[in-house]
Amino acid sequence: MKISAIAQYNYFCASNNIRNRQTFKGSKVEMLTPEQYEEYNDLRVFNHHIYEYKKGIRSLILTTEKSKHRNAIEEKLQKNNIPYLIHKHDNKELINVFFGDEPCIKVISTFSPKLNRLNAEQDFILGVLLGYDKVAQCDRYLSIKTGKLKLGPTEE
Image (tube, rainbow, N blue to C red; front, side):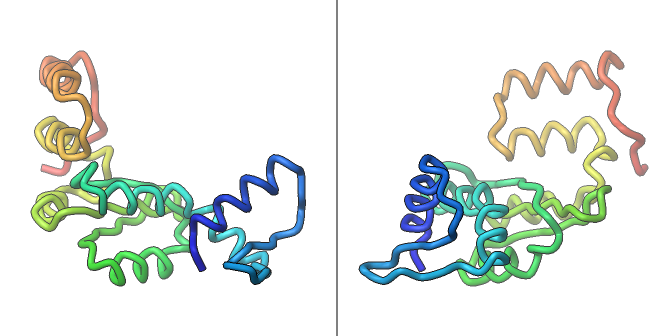
């Protein structure tokens, strides 16, 4: 089933307040189960991140997703041969999913799985790898080092 066809039809449905969950595949009409529709909606941002990664827009992605979709997420990343790392979120119903280039994943795997426990250097590296503004990351790093900005407790 093509995601673009689902996305186009989903937009059509939303804009016309249509409540059924039909998708068009070629000339066929297929029905999504409520579970499939929920998963599709829940993973739209995740699927967009995969698109960005494959197009070379970013080399590392961090997304927070519902833990009930972990198997679908892992399956999709494995199918696309994309290195990844998944950590449980503080909220047990969520997971943090890192995926991207292998060296980036290897670096992230050396950090604490708790993002609020990163030290200033790890916070800086993560921000740069995720593609955040480098000057803003430098300002953030200096604010942390001078005590103007506090991170969570570190594990050292």
